[in-house]
Length: 441
Ligand code: FES
Image (cartoon, rainbow, N blue to C red; front, side, top):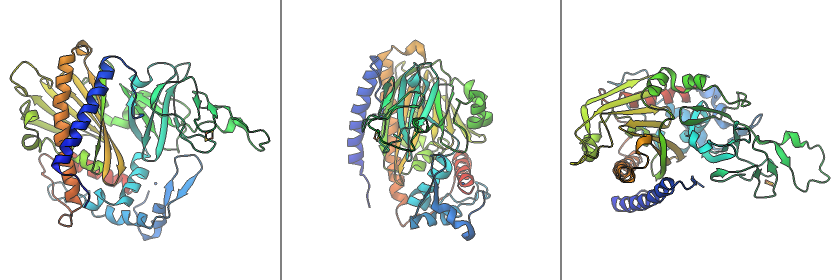
């Protein structure tokens, strides 16, 4: 069985720590960021063919997935019953966390629908700013054109499918690195090289394929669903309600806004299914006193509370006496931990906000992108920033070891399903019920 032992995890943690420090330094000294250069019916045998059709994010195209494994996912779905109350419910079976066909279904029905957080507004602050990213098999580029209008496209050249842009930065146009077809920042194909003699070709029909884009607060959102016209940037108030539901005002009034200064990004590749990381986040602080003793000392865990909304859960906790004996206090008097289904977390505590974006890379691998924001008055306090990031890093390393251990346990023949601790793990149960609802539609 593939996995990592504690020693190798620690070694990797050190490497990540070193990498994170260099990224941090780049931001403190205002060096341009280089990021990761960085279907409705319940499933039954009569409509089993649906699962073999993988919706293509490109318009008017459908990819037929001939993988025989794709037929297993619906059987796995019904091993979790969202109608059973949390006090009596079994957790989803381990196969939800290990089976490749289940991940394929999740990408299609969860990640390729609805609004997904992909970045933050600071990345596309100025005209000609751009950044790239990947969600499942969808490669995307987000940019602001010369007039300041925001766009998002599939980052795929219309000639022979080369990726067009890499990393982030500024560009006046996108020139394909393969044969130099050139696209404007509005996605129009401006130049197709060496096409003399070509017939039945219109340059106006070969622009980049657009995606729906929106912003909410400091976040950039994409909607990959190709059933909706991506022509215009969506209204942020409407998107806020679609994305956050009735929690929208609570979050914006809770200090999650554009006034915070961006500090740095750290990325962690973790050997666990993406949901293991989410579950760990959603246990209502259950694991904190046992696995994060340093963090626990800075929180009044008896004050921990959890509230669930349509697609959001918010955990909150009052601050405790502190993680250290001196005046250093990164957690403040109250911490708010918001989970936005399916994979985005917003943590607001003391002067800090950090976000965690959980990206599935495979059935047992995910990448978690941490972005840190700080109240503007502290953005030049390097000592406070470095110490805060060290403490945060320690918690992430503790969580990585936990999550990788859980994944190995899920792959063991000894385990199928578990139980919920009803008074603390209601947000986790809420997450699983939402997932089941999405996957059965
Ligand atoms: S693949 Fe882009 S120009 Fe040929």
